[in-house]
Image (cartoon, rainbow, N blue to C red; front, side):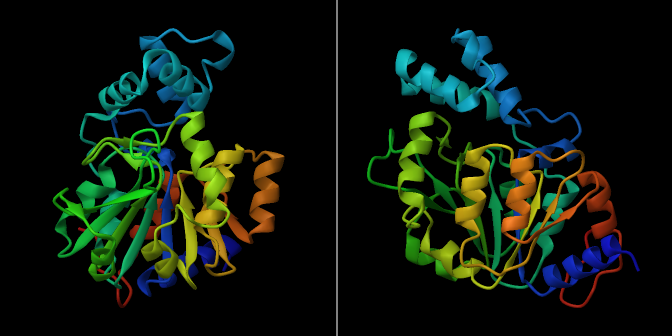
Length: 287
């Protein structure tokens, strides 16, 4: 048995046992045919600067471009542009639907993009809710908002009763158009994240002792690495990341430092191998 097949078997078993936290990045939307929303920070930056002129040197930098728009056109303009970019519903991919069937409770899924595909996939569960990061520019003094599955506001204490928790640390289009996207948004969060203040208690509890499985993510930038590092803090000591192609030195160092085993294959091939296997005990088959 190859190292890759061993890793796939281990991931299947740990998913079935409820010991893995799926961590979804924007690249997951590459699995969605004709996806109607931006599938990467670079594409989102292109859409924003197509609507508002920003200095050439920051046109490809999403957080800097968003900050320029916020400073010179107002936060409401930025929120309106992001709402326009993500207003279309995204049909859940086979991966989203598969994760939603995992029946070891409580399930924790982390999703670091603004689309609503994972929310749609979870609609079939009997009890779930979501926790979203919110901007200090719009909700000063609050780090997260809680929502029931129907989109109505919830209290933090209610999250302890859900059988599945969707954590959207950067916010989401659904249900309340929350977006952490500009430089100042990130500065506020990163100032406090080392002491874990922005991380909701339910996430701190559910991550304990669990492994993380990173899919559709890159770790090229400091922001990408910082969020992953802080969200996986005090979890287990072994994780996986599906990453194909050449890695940067920073990515290689990050994987080594946090004992993240690289699965070097395209995400589509990984998902196909993962779910086209007879369901193991404790896991609901996809279909």
